[in-house]
Amino acid sequence: MKKDKLNAAVKLLTSGMEGGILPLDEDTMNLLQVKHPEPAKLNPEAVVDCAPNEVHPIIFDEIDAESVKSAAMKTQVGRDHLA
Image (cartoon, rainbow, N blue to C red; front, side, top):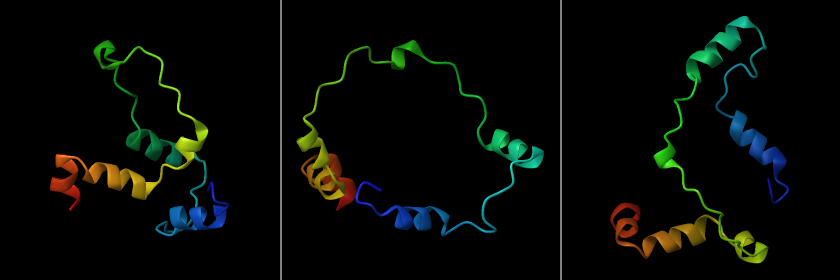
């Protein structure tokens, strides 16, 4: 979507859909509630309480799938699982 390919993104999301968008009725809401139950309570030990590091926008914009894969391949876990 950042590269102005909104139509391609929508097509990718909807290509596996059968019958299109469901109507917002009671049956649909029940199905959604079954698929998305109430979340579990927060475990305070799982929360990192610190501010994130600032990342310069130019550096952030350069992160893509290939750069992530390249960085992962430089780790032992990456070499074991991504090769």
